[in-house]
Image (cartoon, rainbow, N blue to C red; front, side, top):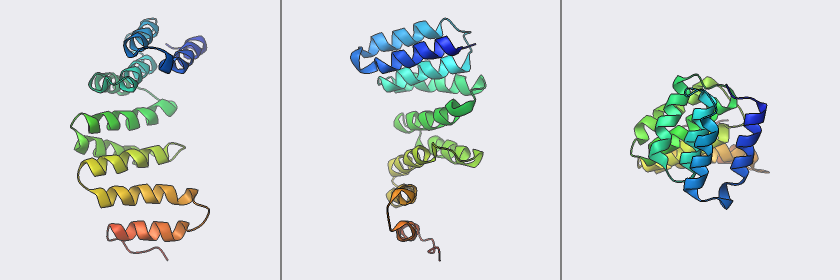
Length: 166
């Protein structure tokens, strides 16, 4: 089981990512994870993230899937869905990624909603469904605009043949 001190060491390692070579970073994360139970969901997630962030996307998928199976919870549960979907999209499984994102959206709403929308938009584009992807991105962007939120949402809905919101 991970603890506060271990989490602090993981956070400190992430801060050094850009200063380390990719193999050294992954090995350092593997070393930290080795201090935990082999099926600790947080450790598995962090190792998957280390692989993903350093370009070892295919290796990340297995760690992410094991983290989910091991019961990853909290904010990392939402993050793993986004990161795993992104990895699946980039390793030739965009349909599976899109299904995962839809399932995650059904779980609820939080501060990662826009990241989820970004991943969905990119996945739709990967599938050749650019108008749908643009619509998703514009709807996610709309609340952040100083004006034109309603217009943006209505134009975005029009891109995919949905009626405007009155």
